[in-house]
Length: 245
View 1 (cartoon, one colour):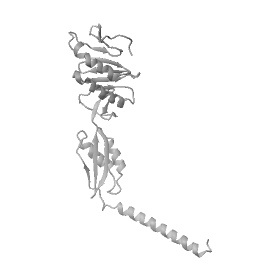
View 2 (cartoon, helix red, strand yellow):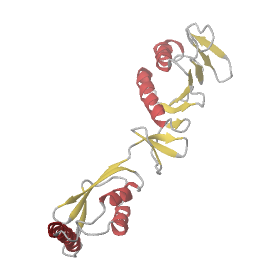
View 3 (cartoon, rainbow, N blue to C red):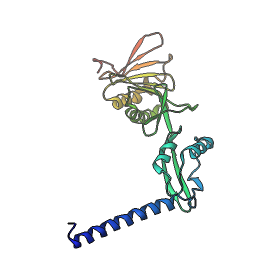
View 4 (spheres, rainbow, N blue to C red):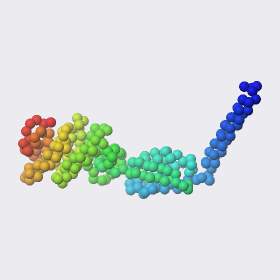
C-alpha cells in the first residue's frame, strides 16, 4: 500500500475527514458548554398541592446542573420523583433557556398494612397523611388486587349506605370487610360480589331492624348467612344451610 500513490491519497483523505469531524465535534461541545447558554429558570407547569416549594427548590439547587443544552433531563426527572407525594414527573427544555417540569402527585386511596399508602392506581407509596382513609390489609404485591376488589365491593354496598372502613385479604386469599358501622363481613375466597349482593338485598328485612346490633356476619354459606350478636349468639339469615364454601 505504501508504494501505491492512489491508496495513500485515499487514506490521507479519510484521516483528514475524521480529524475534521473530531475537531467539529469538540468545537460544538465547547460552544454548548459556554456560559452564553445559561439555564435561567425552572418552570412548574402546574403548582403542586402536596409538594412544598422548599423541597422543589432544593432539588433545583442540588440536582439541576449544566446549561440549557447539557442539563441531564433523566437525572432531573428522577430527582423530582424521589420527593414525597410525587408519582410521575416529565421534564423538557423550553426555549429560551428554561426547563418545564410537570409533576403528577399521588392521590391516596387507602392506608396499606398500617405503614404505607395506596394510590388510586393500586400502587403502594410512602408518605404521611392525616386524611381519613380506609385500611387495606394484604400480602405483599397484592395492593392492586385489593384496590380493585375495594371498588367492586363498594359499588355493591351502595344500597346499604355503608362504606368500607377496612378490607382484608388473608395469606390464604380469603376476603373480609369491616363497614363504617363496625359490622364485619366474612366473604371467603370465591363469589365475593354475589355473596355481598345477596346480603345487601335481604339486609333491610332481616338485620337492619334488629333490636340488637349485629357485629359479625359470615357469608360463606351456599344458601344464606350467619349473623353473630354481641353476646356470641348466632342468628341464621335467609336459610343459612349447608357447609361453608
